Amino acid sequence: MARFSLLSAILLHLVVVSMQQGDDETLDIQQRFGSSSVSMINDQIQREFNAMYLYESMASYFGRPSVGLPGFKKFLKKAANKERERAHKLIDYLNMRGGHVRLKPITPPSKFEWFSALDAAEMALGAEKNITQELYRLRDRADMESDPHLVDFIESEFLTEQVTGIRDLRELIARLNKAGSGLGELIVDKELN
Image (cartoon, rainbow, N blue to C red; front, side, top):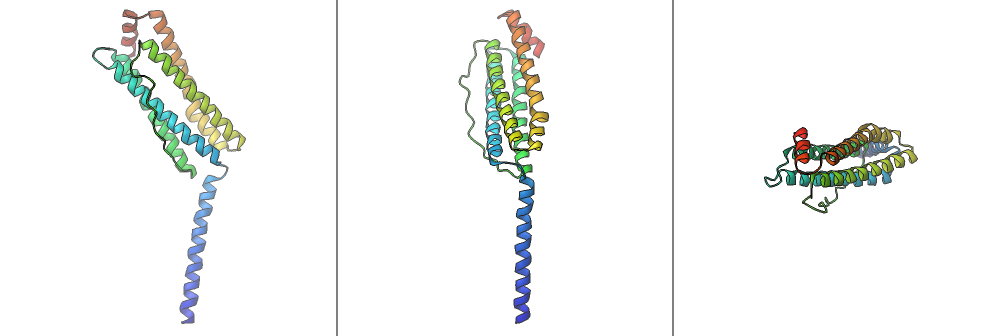
């Protein structure tokens, strides 16, 4: 009977020690990963999904037979897919670092029809500038929290792509302004297709 009690005590001790080691592993993963960074990443996930939703809405609009701009539809569909991929990249990063994903509701776009392709491109540019600004805030927060891994992740996986995307949208807007509406818009659409 004494042997059974001693064996039970040893087993209980081993279980407790292994559970504590599991907690240590979680702490190792989360080292220098502050709760404010986790919260900001969750907010960024929502922004990426919101942008995806906006671009899907725009693609749907330009794909209508009554609008007939398949090049813009294709361009915006590709942009929507990039935003979705970026949201998933952030989700995977949170999981890798031991954070908790807290998905938030997707906000519908403020409108579902656009006066022109130029109007939509300008709205997309505004959305991308906002996303970029928030990524800079997240990067700065990670730097303040001495989290070089998160700083590198944001810089290498997001910021360069954002700057390039903004440049591409500015160039598209410039081409649309030069081409004008009507036939000019159709020519730019053909270039995108």
